[in-house]
Image: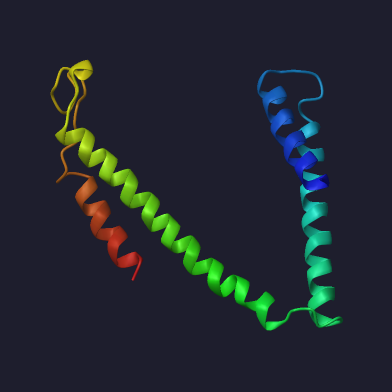
Length: 127
């Protein structure tokens, strides 16, 4: 509850600051302080439970082992869906955009210019 109030205060304070409302400069800092306090207390409790009380059983330890691959798979599925939707919209153009791809008035980048060397740099960095 305290962490969610901190997130609300940070967001609301940021918006207030951007629109020059009174108190908009101090509210994001207060919200960030609440979030940091919540993180500290949460991690302190986790360390106490695992170190002194021995509550990290095999079932508890299996959570990150199952959660990390599940997160990776969900990210891959999201990217596949995103690129499939992009590919579909390039093949099946609609009347609203003039039935051409790219839409009229959009200047397309040369794929052999900046994108190609950036891709060549990006691919080995993940290996």
